[in-house]
Length: 577
Image (tube, rainbow, N blue to C red):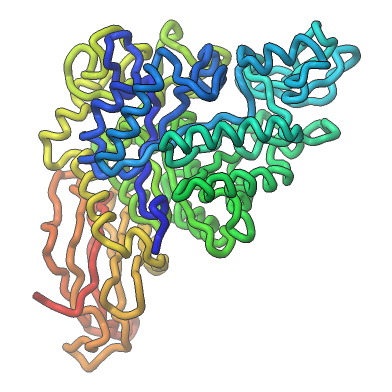
């Protein structure tokens, strides 16, 4: 039997941008609670909520000043308890973002640590002598400078590889580890179903503080191979300890964020004995170009890299990356919308747990913001370069066409997307052909079909003919045999593409189809074409045995002409009725 997190569709909420309940222009916990019926209706199973702990917000919650409270901006601890209970009443689980690589400089631990080397909390952080040169070439990713910052009171420099306001923990300190583990137990006892672990593979740094070697990659590595300040093997022991704590709490999940695009690194976070993290994000998949071949290659590499018993996951958008609908945009908005449907169908039908980002169900895009509207420290630092900062993917959720987009009665903390009056929940709810309707039906089909939740996957070759590489095709099935077989066909091209699904047995005499081969494919779900036309769902595509000639032997099977940018989910059947 599958674990709940294997069957689940996760939905990431960036709380500042989801729903404001008090008119201050910033989303909050009461706002999330007010939208739970929408989320339950969408069909998602679990909410991942980005940081809500007390914070000076120098990095918008990823600089935590108190790991056991709620920032007043978002509400109170009672508001959080009410949210958890209301979510559970609707069958929704709640996962929090645990930022345990670093704290805020305003956390009581660091405020004490920077006063004296003799303070016990001093050992919670990483230091080097102030006298002399900096120990290495490590950089602050969001400040684009050395990661070592002076602390004259102790005659030292402290390490902060994101901003100077986020001093890094010393995970070799047993007392620090106990503190973090107690924090996990605290939230588990409150009903939290798990944690997404921010930059989990950055917990440990090289004990000798060696410099990273150079790299030609600018993003996200800043021309360094992060082998000494990230991705150290010592992390695995911590993951095992965290897993034991999660298992003791029962039916919890730990999801790791890794640094970089290495699928092997993400796979290793599960542990060879499947005794570390339950899941880890593989960002290689997210960064693929618009190509059926590229996505297949990435997915196959991810499946191959995972240890036995480990479970995959897939995501195409999050709070740190430009949205998928923006990355895969075209000049023609109809093509952009159709590509978004293809991407969503792929995400929700591959073998593995899908993670949606708020607004992805609407095909929300990204827009360049004026300098005066920027809030992200990286965006401010890299201005006027566009879309390096993270504000464009964090704009408020558009609920309706009212002046505040239904998000707020006040002035939103970031501007709404310029197209919010047309692209919003209310408008798409009223349109049965909308992206929101497509997403809802995809999730409903995934929930109804075991093949899509936990079945095996087999990628299908569409041949070597013209355009064959434009079709991503795979079979999902629970057990051997012609029944219980679903076929997913995704045409990444604007042009029609012919596909052929062979029968399960050798060809029979002319004009017949072997009984072991599927007689037809039933259309379970079909996306609209660029013209707006759509195949009737429930209709049958019958098998055929085309005439042979000298160049092409007779083949029994199902021939389909995919329309441009069409997503098609079929059920192979032995019945013609």
